[in-house]
Length: 142
Image (cartoon, rainbow, N blue to C red; front, side, top):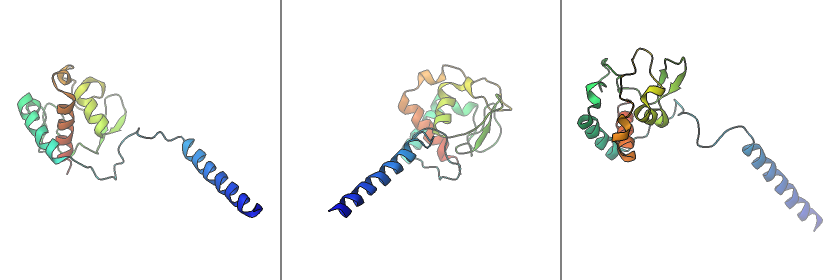
């Protein structure tokens, strides 16, 4: 009986140590930026809705979708890319960055562009519409 109890005790200690190492590894689950080597996943239905929203709300007056320069950054190839900001930071254009660029455009202005997007632009969109726009931009990554 003693060998069995010692085996269970050792297993509990090993599992506990593994859990403790995971919990205290310094990584925060669900935060951070997109891994640039990970494929970008797109909800195709949301991307179609986002394309319609982009056309009907005036986004495409400043942002192009074919890579050509506009008064705002092109959306072609943005998702998943490194974005040099006027603040001297470089960020990855993940879902958080793309959403923030719509809701608070002056907080992360890309180098080479002026902060001309209306600061309250995101206020006229629902949370779902913002998500659809993000999916549309992501669909233009390739």
